[in-house]
Length: 360
Image (cartoon, rainbow, N blue to C red; front, side):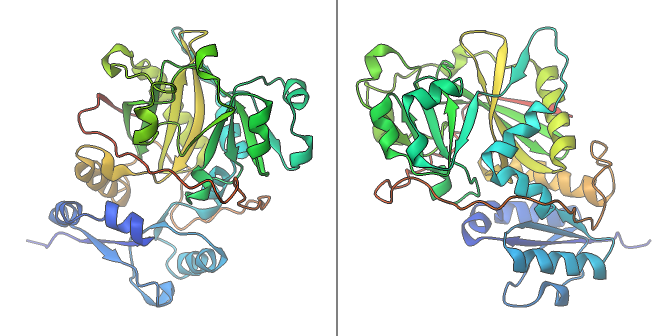
């Protein structure tokens, strides 16, 4: 009896990402399915390692891009997850959400879009009148233009009035804040697999909680403990009260974003606009998020590796093995807010939070 073929998946991840994602439980489960997860030695040229059937990575920079391109030329059948050029689009918060506007989703019970937003390169032009000219009004969320996963890229402000504008340091994106019941829907995509979880978010804004000029936070779904305990900004609520978006609706969005982004691994954040109960807004898209926070992520990832290595992934015919797309992207500096604004800690995804799993 012929021995079953084994597959090699080389992974190149930053130390923090590697520590959270490459768990022994994942390595062992993948090994049982004939998939060997092999750490890529970053002290050696990639082209001298392997050969791998798949290269899984979350590293950036011109040197790494050149190494991936050279590897794809030498091993044309290697599957690179994901293309650096495709990932790059998510590093700019304007082009990131532009992806969502390209989708045509038909749903009788729900609609979706993106918040109003504008990009600011010059701090001198930021004023209340400028916001009005851009169709924005207070409160607004200020986010660094660059979204590369760094601590600085997560540093955001909820700005309540013109005094809060003085804390901004361009280039930034100013985005309308929409009351959404303090609940965010995080939708994780792993190839054909989609999981939606509900998490607590920023509280709704009323006249009573706009006494300060701004509120600093790291991520919409990750207020730190002191902020959560501050009644001035945060009121505890029961996540059970929040209804999940329709399954078919999430499925269509996930499929559309896969085609538009040409990515296998990402998540997107949705909020429900309180002004229109069946309207949802995509507020963020992230590459290779914290999958280890998902319950049973080991099974999800192992099934994903198996499907793509055995060509069973039906949702993404446009992703070709060894392809590195050529797109010209505008380079922007990763400038955030003042250095005195420290990044806030990120709270883990709670296992007990309600989930919903679907296939696309």
